Image 1 (cartoon, protein in one colour):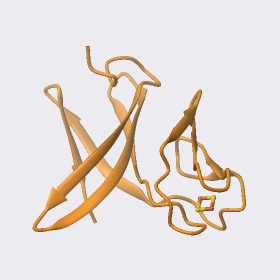
Image 2: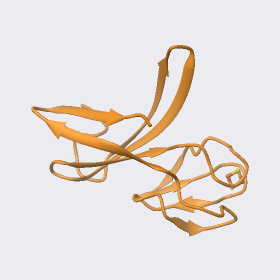
Image 3: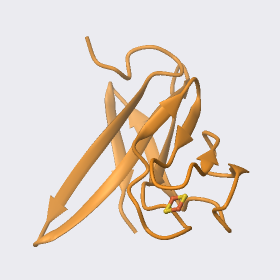
Image 4: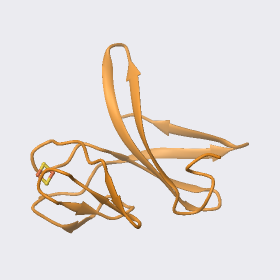
Length: 97
Ligand code: FES
């Protein structure tokens, strides 16, 4: 079963295109609603890889971000950038920008 099958399910993804690697956090926040976030911590650039309930956690200095990317606890100075998503016909599209 997909880790995104249920609401509040989440996945860490790695996207590689034309030699560029992007780390993306994806969370299902409603039946047909997903959030995708750039996983690079806005503090010092670690990959945000932890999860605590619906909160994403940076392993380096403990910054925490909610499912919208907003900072719940620092030292991160800014939110994780959100990526545009679309969900149709059981296909989730994440636009890298
Ligand atoms: S790099 Fe993420 S909290 Fe410092």
